Length: 160
Image 1 (cartoon, helix red, strand yellow):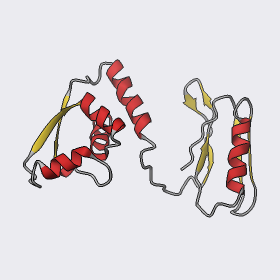
Image 2 (cartoon, one colour):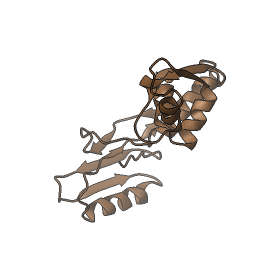
Image 3 (cartoon, one colour):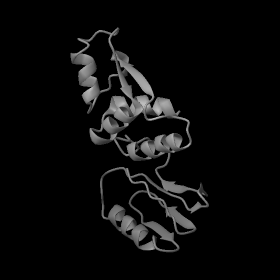
Image 4 (cartoon, one colour):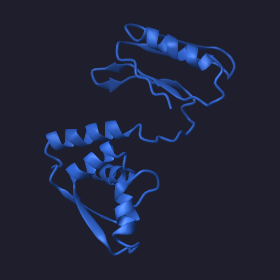
């Protein structure tokens, strides 16, 4: 997944059919980055590439344009940093405390990376009745440091 945000001003992304050229232009300091992105895509990758470009004006996204924006791509861990930023903003605003506790049980186990899933499966011996309690801080550290999917999903539910 390639996500690209043009921070310096108006952005234009013109996308033609696969195999044709991708023309990207952006006023300001990101023009070189957009040219390099276009060069990489045009180099002949066989992958389906998704690109989103949008100017940010006063903290608002305006007129986003993109390539393959209707296709679904696995997010993997690309959203964990923005999720952490939203969570910490909520902490700063007093909506959530890092000391708040959240209980996790077997239904919270997730495939992929995760020390919490292993704890839920091993220590709980697969029982749906066993729960472990963690602070928001512990879950955030586990999500970010260990790329833990169970911690991330629980925090996503917490922030909405």
